[in-house]
Image 1 (tube, rainbow, N blue to C red):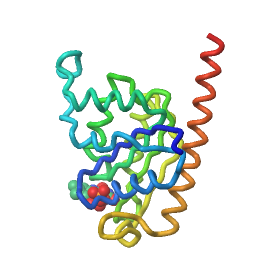
Image 2: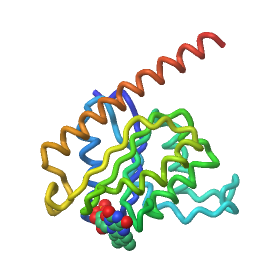
Image 3: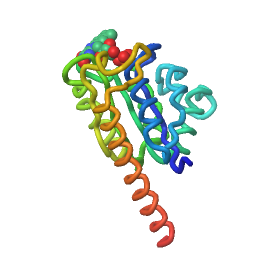
Length: 190
Ligand SMILES: Cc1cc2nc3c(=O)[nH]c(=O)nc-3n(C[C@H](O)[C@H](O)[C@H](O)COP(=O)(O)O)c2cc1C
């Protein structure tokens, strides 16, 4: 039975996306983790600070924020576009800046690409933003040569990818448990 609720952010809206496949694999790889909210990312409007305020907050953004607030951790899976993260990934993160939705949350960063670097350069650009937003980076997983390791729907079958994702989910579970214990201790000492 799932113990931890983890917000899923996938920065590709493509139907047979390898990055969506990677997020699905993550969701299947740990019975203790339930990935939520990933369907909300594609419904978010472009971030506009004028809308980031009480009554004008778009419904999809409000739903996304409350899903982030209720989650104990985060998995961000982003394609690399022109050596940076996709705009969809950054847009989702921008909506969480004002609400502090990543603060103190153990976070896994992942990407898949047909190229040899597996999307690593997109990670390099995201890490300073994640740090600023207070997220706790647990692991960074890149999958290179994606088309040879996944089927036509973007679902990965390569055992090396399956094992790498399983290990990163194990790391995330350990970090979630540690962060939960730390919160409980600080509540007790208040
Ligand atoms: C506009 C654009 C820019 C891209 N730039 C890069 C890049 O810098 N590095 C890379 O490894 N792949 C790049 N690619 C290839 C993507 O990694 C590939 O399309 C991948 O399948 C996208 O992820 P998805 O399958 O989850 O949609 C680019 C693709 C597009 C459409």
